[in-house]
Image 1 (tube, rainbow, N blue to C red):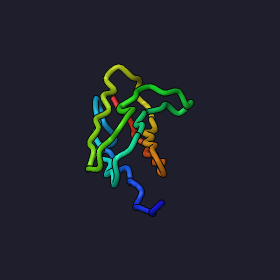
Image 2: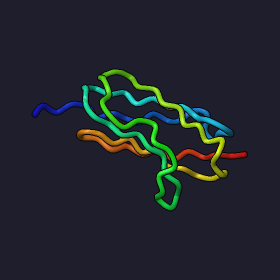
Image 3: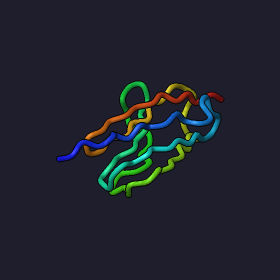
Image 4: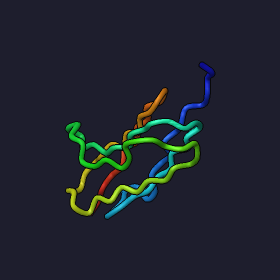
Amino acid sequence: ATASASPVLEAAYPNPFATSTSFALPVSSDGRATVAVFDLLGREVATLHDGPLAAAEQHFTFHASALPAGVYVVRATGEGFAETRRVTLAR
């Protein structure tokens, strides 16, 4: 297997946010990936993507209008990478 740069989950914008926040995930090679959001108790509150991703800069938006204010963790996992970012939902 050849080594390749692993994706880096970019900072969400805006953060803190009121209803939704967006971020990018540069993907260097085609493959399966999951992008999900968890609360601080580890419960999954949203799945933004689960399946194949093409090699490109992928963009995701987390819509949180139905969730309570607080800190959430965005986690992107795939073949050879796992990245997390904290986002703050403020009302």
